[in-house]
Image (cartoon, rainbow, N blue to C red):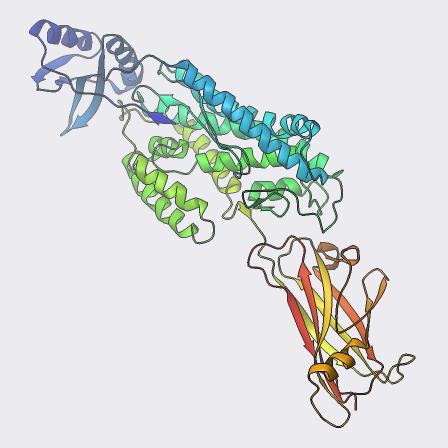
Amino acid sequence: MTAAGPGPLPSSGATELEKIRAIVAAYFPVYETRVGPQSLLLAVHVDRTELAEKFDRLRQELWGLGYIPLVRRQSGEDFIEVVRRSRTGRPRIWINLLLLAGTVATTAFAGALIWLTYVGGTALTPNDFLLGALYFAAPVMTILGLHESAHYVMARRRHVEASLPYFVPVPPPFLFGTLGAFVSIREPFPDRKTLFDIGAAGPVAGFLASVPIAIAGLYLSIHAPVLPATYCGPTILGQSYGNLEVGTPIFWFLLAQFFPPNLVNLHPLALAGWVGIFVTAINLLPAGQLDGGHVFRALFGERARFVSYGVVVLLFGLGLFYTGWLFFAVLILILGFRHPPPLNDLTPLGSTRYAIGGLVLVLLVTGFVVVPLAVPPGSVSFQNASSAVPVSLPPGAQVAANLTATLANGDQFPHGYGLSAAVTNVTNATGVYLTGTAFQEWAANATWRFFLPGGTTVVLTGASVTLPQSDFVTVDETTAYKVPIAVEFSDSELARQATLVLSATQFCAPSGAQPASASFSPLFL
C-alpha cells in the first residue's frame, strides 16, 4: 500500500493567503503568520482535546481547495503549515480491471497445476482448471480482495482518497500465480490513528478470511488421495510442483494440532489458506510502505525507522536461507526506509490501538516462516552397513554374503527410492585380482536376493542389477524416515573376496542430488 505526499505552495496573491489564514483561524486561533516561498506557516493555539477532530475537518476543507495542512510542535509552539497538494490524474479503472483479469487467469492456471499435482494426474484437463479455480484461485483471490478492500473501505471511512486494488499477476513457474495486490493512498495520512487503522485493516481482514479457509482445507486434506512415492508431478520451466515442501509458521503448526499428524498431501484449499496466513505476515513486516510499516510508524513514531533498518538487515541475513527475502529487502530499499509522518503527528493513539497493535505483532510472528517454500535437497544415506558370510550356502553357490544396511531419508519428507547393486572387484581363490573377461565371467554368475520392507523378495542375476520401478522402497514418517535393507549375494564360482556396492536413487530427485551407496567387502575364504 503506497501513499502520496504533499507538494509546495507556489507564490500566491494576498487574497488567497488571507483566505487560507481565515480558514485555519476558524478552527485554531492564529497569533502569527509567516509567508514562505513554498508554504504558509501559522502559529496557532491548540487544545489537545479537540486537535484530532478539528484538524481533520480543516484537512478536508483545505483538500477540496487544493491544499494540505500539517501540524507540528517546535520550540514549545504549535504550528500549522499549509502547502499546495500535488495534483493526481484521473483514476484509470481499466488498469485495475486488466490486472484483475490477468491475476484471475494466472491464479486459475496455477490452481489447475496444483490440483493436477494433488490428484496425481499427468496432463491438464478442463476438470483440473475447474477444480483448481474453485479450490485455489477463488479462495486466494477472495483473501487478497478482502485484504485490499479493507484498506479501501477504511480509507474512505476516514475521508482519505484511495485507489481501487491493483492485483499483480505472475505466470508460472511462480507457484501461486500472483505477487499479491496493493491499494494506492492518494493523499497523506491525516493522523496516527488513521495511519494505524488503514494499515492494520487489510492484514486483519485477510487473516480472518484465511483461517476458515485453512481449517476447511486441512479437513479436506484428511481425505487426500495417497500418491505413490514415484509420482513427480508436473514441471514448468524447471519448477517441480510435486516435490515442494511448504514451511510451517507457528500459527499453522498450532492449527494443525487439531488434525491427524500425517497430512502430507495438502488439499489446494489448505494451500490457499496457508498463502493467506503467510501473505498477512509478509505485509506486516515493519518496514517502509508495507502495512507493517504503517502500523509501526503509528505506534512508535519516528523511532520506527530503526525497526525498519533492522528488518532490512534481517531480511538480507535470511536471504542466506531463502533467496526470496533478498527481493523483499531490495524492495524496501527502493521504497525507502523511512515512513513519511502523518499530517497530524501530535494526537496520541490511545490504549485500544496499542492493544490491537500487540495482536498485529502476534499475527506477524506466528504467520512468518524463514523458509516458506523449499525443494527437499535429496539427502539420503546408508547407515550401519555390514556384511556376514552365512554358515550354509544357498543351493548351487560357492560363495555368499548377507548384506544389511539402513536406508536413511535425510529430507524428513516422504520419498521413493529405487535400489541397485553391483560387483566392482573380485579376488579369486588364489588371491589373484580378476580383470577383463575373467572378472566379467565371475560377476555374470552373481545372484542378488533383495528382501524389501513389507515382505517382498526380488531375485536378480548379473554383475550389475537394478530393481524394477514397481519394486521401489518408500521411506517416510511411518518408519521414522529409516528403512532396513537386506540383500543376499551369492555366486556359483569360488572367490576369496569381492567388493559389492549397494545404491539407492531417489525418484523425482532435485538437480544435484546424489544417490546413496554402501560398499561391502566380504571375505569368503
